[in-house]
Structures are given as structure tokens and as C-alpha cells.
Image (cartoon, rainbow, N blue to C red; front, side, top):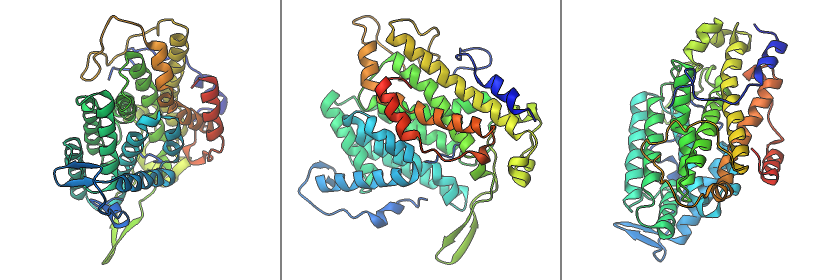
Length: 396
């Protein structure tokens, strides 16, 4: 096991640049669902129609109830997203609440079903739901209703085709969550970054798309920050997933555990430091090599945050970012060239989206203080203050 001093010397790294160690491109978010479990607590009353598509009739009262439901889910299930919501532009807050609540539902799926078949059925339900919402016929459940309202507002502001990017990103999120439902370890650190790009960075792309704001620099920043957030979510989940899950209580009694213990740290990192899954399951924080593995993975997340901070500093100074955006040219990452440079305006408009970096950095600081032992990381009480400071200083 590396000494604390050795870890801390290596911890402060230079900004990340695309190289052979970072190829272009489960989470347990702190952020239970049956196909529609929340409907038991979400009553929709028939009111004069606000929006009407097919058989769906959505009222102002329905939208307000849906908003309250989503905000309550975030408050108790993903408090960081609950705090960050207020810094997102008001026009995007409905979309943010709906999308983050859906992400919370999807992230919890492996913990709340008794077998993978049921989990895939629920993923199919959400995929079909998304298609119906974007077709203008939302199911009568809160996430769908609030997302439908956000889409209608977006189309009213930016035109009927403005929601296409949002749908693309949302389906990618669902498909990626489905691929990682079984909580298998990532093959490599690069594959963990790919996962983070397709989940946490994608959530940030969706927030930008809901504004709408299409900018190569904002997407580039979101990619680095999202990768850091996805890696942090994996580290935060170690104490939870390494312990056996609680039995599911059904009408007929206990159904059984939903899953065996899991460790999602990349296999290449574990092999490098000599860490074995079985040791973590048996010995928890005392497993030989655990802190070394966590340090290596956390360092990559920290590198992404350092890179994003340097990029933001350079962009605000009117300078080049210093490296190319690895996803430029891919679907939904095609940008118009020429015309007026809107970089400064884009940063001001979308700065609230970039604040996702603050909770990730806060956790990494606490992890470092715990000598990279995820079982000993203390709860954060400084996050609201750090967010306030980030907004005041316009730094992440």
C-alpha cells in the first residue's frame, strides 16, 4: 500500500490532454421502481386542457404536481442535483428536474428488481415512454408530464425541430444504463470514461440542449466535467455495492437479494495494484491495494476537472483551449463555422450547467482527506457554500 505522502504527491496532476492513455470517446449515483411505482402517490385530476395530444390531456395542475414530485425525488435521492437545479436557466429547470429524476430511477434499477428480465422490461418501458413523450402523447406519470411540458416550451422558444437533440441524448442515456445494469467491473479505465461520457456528460448535453445552446466549447467542457462526475459516482458507490443488497419485501414476504456484491473499479487498474474483488467483499476497506486502485482512478477524475478549469480560464481570456474536442464531428456534435464568435456569451448562458464540476471536486477533496479510502469519506456540509462561491467567482 502506498503511503499517504506518496499518494498526495502524485495527486496534483497537469491538465489532461488526449493521448494514448485517454482514448476518445456503474454508476451508483447518490442519486425502486416498478413500471410506474410513483403513480401510487401521484393523482392526476381532469382540469381544463393545457396541452392535448392524442388521448393525453395535461393541465397546469398536473404539471405543477409533476414538478413537485420530481423535485421531492431529487431532494431525497440526489441532493446535489436538487441544489444544482436552481443555477440552471429557468427555462431549462423543468427539463433538468425531469431528466435527473429519470436518471435516478434508472440508476436505482439494479437495486430494486429481483432479476434482470424485469429490469430490462422496465428499461423498455422507459424507452417506449420517451418515444411517446416526444411524439406528444405522454403517459400520465410525473416524469413524462414534466418532460412533455419542457419539450413544448422548448419548441415554442426555438422551433419544432429543436427537441431532436434532446431525444437523441436521452435514448443514449437509457441504452447505456441498460448495458451496465449487471454491475460488472469496467474492463479498463478508458471504458469507465466511455461510460461516464455516455451517462453523466450526456446528462449535461441534455441540459444544454434544453436551453438550447449548441457550442463546441460548452460541449467540450461538459465532456471533461461529465467524465469526472461519472468516475466520481463509481468511486462513491464502492461502499454500497461491495456490501450485499437488502432483501426485497414483496406481498408474499421476502423475495431475496437483488444482486451479489459488486466492485466496478477497472480491471486493468486492479491488476496493476494487485487488488482482488473477493478481498474487498470480505475485508472492505482493509483489502490490500484498495486505496492504491482508488487513487489511480480518482486521479483521472481530478485530471478531467483540472483540464476543464484551465479550458474555462483560457476561453474567458479569449485564448485557445489547447487541445481538440475528441467528439467533434460525431452525431449531435456538429457545429457551424464562421460568423460571430459567441464564446463569451455561451459561457455566461451555460455556466450553471458547468457547476456539476463543484460536487465532483468536493467529493475528491474529501476522498483525499480520507487517504483515498472510500469507506471513510465524510459527508459534505460545505457544498452549498462551494456552489455559492463558484457562482460569485465564476470559476468551477
